Length: 635
Image (tube, rainbow, N blue to C red; front, side):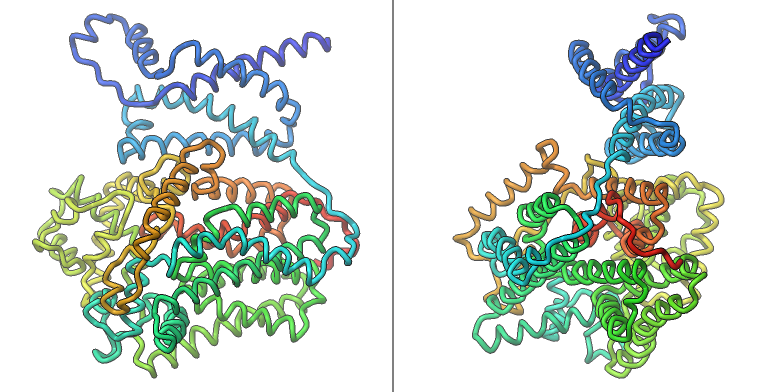
């Protein structure tokens, strides 16, 4: 009986390996045959076989080699597939397979036609999808079996201030080349706009052209967080006093790198004290030290790194308070409130992340009213200060304008443009007029939206938003938008998927990993000496080649592919949910909500993923570490 079962298992693995190998070596696409080809092939069976054979783009020997390798892999991984795992592993693998197929289709055609376009595409997608599903099932099965035990006691002598500065020194030493090569920092048009606000240069302040300013004499606005603009202004002022704006901004970047390295060092001390094995801590140190994303963005004059530092600190503090509620002392709560307040000041979506998070906090802590109250106080006080005190009173008093509503409408704008591209002739004259009240197109025609529609980037369409649009105009536009949704929902779904598929695709057109120096030369018109030294240009080109090479090499490409981090976060969410780690999920909820906000943004690219990359080691620790319970849970 046992021998029979083993034979059956091996037959299953052979079949699974064949399907997976075939799926990796074939493409799903729409094959359209001419009448002559159909006549020549004859029966439907022959036509189907022809289409299947033509979808395979690899030689047969390669398919066999891949199948053999996968067979041995499946024999090893098969033991990880228990019934409890299959209950959620199969649906997740099917979903993941569908995502991969859609990503491939959107990358090639900007539509889902290679999956749903016709019966051929659907049939080939099903065949390929089965193989990919099997592959995901075994991979996820192995990952879900990974666990490590928390060490009960850690020698405090090993975790000292000396350890903190040692780690910090290692990180900074590894990052020094980037600090030199990227002098005086990496900057883009967003940086230019903030510098224009600081120097009051209305001609180079592009947000002044997109926002209804409260006062023509005050171009400072909250499109980019005012607090961060003020932070940059401090270092520009320092640069002015020392006679070099470039060194002022370099000082900012170095300070940012020091802050990031100090945060990572503190984090490593924290997890070491929590019982994370020393070997794992060393691997995390290597990840922090050698991942080029950290020093490159540390040398970038944008809000992402300070925001990421504070989100990591906030998550740790929330997690600690959830696991040890007795820590919610007045001092602890005050520190948490300050962290959350500054965090909201560094990115405008921080407030909305907390709004979404609060109901989940109430749900988890409902049975413990005492600690629930302390949590709500820690969240609500900074939120009220931010929304009412700063946004409601301080900014209006200083005549600081709010950001444009267009920042929340990237998805509807893209959907409208795609709708016009495909069904523009069905719009009435009245509907076109309503749309043109919202958009200042070059030729005052809705056809401009269709012609300039870029499926995976909303910036062009968004830039045409009419800043004089009234609430009534916007209301009427949303009615037209809703009418299109009712009549052709597939267009809206495709526009959304096309804009966001890059978050999951390892092949995407949004491959801008970082800003290689100052990409907006208008900055020099305001700060004359702020430019990347020409003698460093060859070295910056080498750096660019190095990063590009990393993105093309298997495994190392994961480091610089933001889609890799999306997949990790998706799997971590499922694992924490299945393992009933609800407090861990709640603690990392800020990251997942931030991810959801990214899906309604104007483009998917690396910069928006920085907070998730910074917090990745802590996420994995919370997902895979089995805690030693020393005190009973009070929730």
